[in-house]
Amino acid sequence: MPRIELEAVPVRVGAAYPAVYLEIGSRHPDDLTTCPDGDLMSTNRDGRFVHKDGTAYP
Image (cartoon, rainbow, N blue to C red; front, top):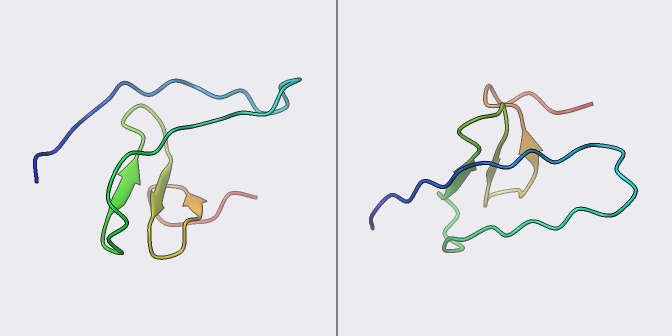
């Protein structure tokens, strides 16, 4: 499967409106979603968003 890279757009925490994001990919448990411009990633194994080193956000 080809690798696709998209530009990341920052989401402001504490905004007046809820954020909506679109995640594209298969539901394969080995898929990994990362933000190239930020310290953020998520796996399909648990769906949590964490730092790229794997530590949880507070």
